[in-house]
Image (tube, rainbow, N blue to C red; front, side, top):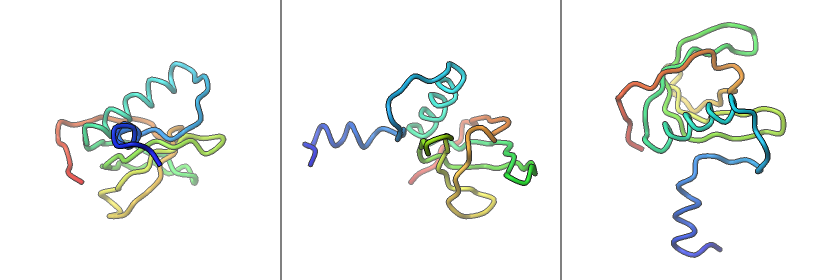
Length: 103
């Protein structure tokens, strides 16, 4: 069990992964996503799915997770009206409008 301040600090993190060296491009992408999660900023992305179809999505990012070989972004997808996981290596483009969301 974590103490109050430690629990608050751990709970404010939006990155769930083992500590190891990352390449600079991945580090920057994760930092951008962490900032969007913490600021509760809506993101507009272009995403390519496993069938190689591209789509535009407005998402509410919740956290980044490492699944052994790939990074994923857990988010609420406005288009699908459901929680979705987006592989970071399939996000082709992203922008963070000034609009924020509430939990």
